[in-house]
Length: 226
Image (cartoon, rainbow, N blue to C red):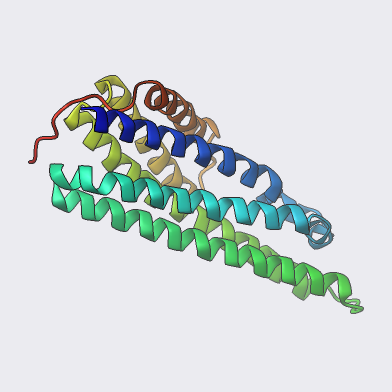
């Protein structure tokens, strides 16, 4: 059906926008757990406040675009399975809420850096500890957000696999790739060092899927309810 093809292409372009906003949001943020090894890390955060605010704006925009994707897909998934559709949309809303929380934590870190620079106190231990905890708040919320993202993405790929709206190799690859991300997040929570490749392989899959959807859209397959 032509409607399916157009919908698929819209999803593909939205995925492209998510990548164009999401990648710079990580680059501009300049925040890492190794940052706290530097004694004056709060001064560095203060000096890069503008870039960090831009990253927060882009990150929230990327999360909002995922809600747009979920909204467009909801009627299609609902025809396939009503419960999966509700779970899919609800998880994306939870992901958005976690993302907002993590960015609020980051904004408060910027406020703390301002107080740190303006303070005349000789004892900066309080600021250092508070800054470290704010960074930890952000990263733990970020990991939980990724796990919710992975859960919703798995539902999406499962729906694509059953409906055959894209080649099954793409949807099966997606389920495997996003499962690796989910497991990697839990391993990180248990304080195990995880290679970046556990996460980057999912990005490679998304690029391939995005390109397919922009070029081909969804196949004119009928969505059979379960």
